[in-house]
Amino acid sequence: MKIDIRNLSEDQIIDFFKEKGFDSYRGRQVYEWIWKKSSHSFDEMTNLSKDLRLMLDTHFVINHIEVDKIQKSSDGTIKNAVKLFDDYTVESVLIPTEDRTTACVSSQVGCSLDCNFCATAKLKRMRNLNPDEIYDQVVTINNQSLKYFNRSLSNIVFMGMGEPLMNYNNLIKSIEKISSDKGLNISQKRIVVSTSGIPKMIKKLADEDLRVNLALSLHSAIEETRNLIMPFSKKFSLEEIKDSLTYWYAKTKRKVTFEYIVWKDINDSIEHISALIKYCKSIPSKVNLIEYNSIGDENFKSASENMINLYKDLLEKNKITVTVRRSRGKDIDAACGQLANK
Image (cartoon, rainbow, N blue to C red; front, side):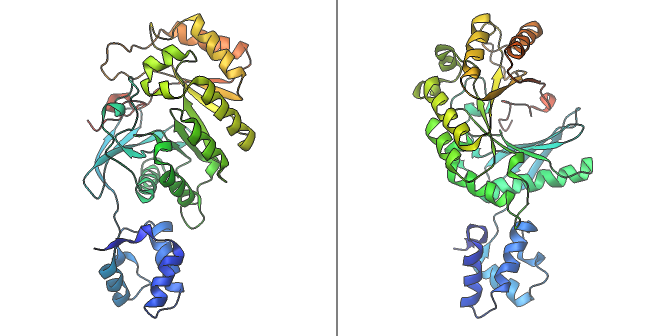
């Protein structure tokens, strides 16, 4: 059975060529083709002889993604249904604003968690994505950004399908490849890893020599409410999460961003605002108030504009940085929480 060449390190590819009696620079050329130039075929490697390309084809494959379907929103957002080599499908999203283009990428087929408000959580987790499959999503969206908006990708968020910290090793490998000068050379400071809150893995990420940013889906700073919204969170108390985020800041000196949706009759009260303010004051943090995107569950309805504004006003009065994030791509089910391979 052929090996996917992108599972090999540069040194391993160089060693392969040496064993076959070729100069080591051939290995470096191939590594550049598969990562920096994002080549999906040995035939594209035009600075290699035909015999060398045939030799590679005999031993290796390049299991790349294919965009199965593209949907375009009225606001410019583009959603890709991405077909993997084994016929599973995930979704990735290009989110354009006036001055930037963000890639929202998936890390798992389905999801390991059970957040009740999220369409992806209704899907069974089938498998983790490989580093190259994550990488390919970024390459695809960068090409779309150049094609439709005449500019390169500026930001990457791991907020697509799946819980990134439950695919930890592949997440780290993909970030290293994306940010490497032998890869896409995108600054790690422009990458956000979003988690639902797994304390042990947050600390592990803090210990990595990375400069990525961290976002955490909070949605309530009251334990009982959060457990109703996100049942898996019963395993991880808010106190444990606070401890891991304190550790994160001590190691990285980067504030965490709390992702926070306000729902009618769930967390739209002064009690919840007060709890959030108290929680934010205990951890260097900022807040993204997110517009809710319906997935057809009657239990979850967006709170009133007045309530969202009250959250914003009271957070600001307490000197907590807050942004109200309007959803993009709702008309094509591309907004936060809506990715479900419809």
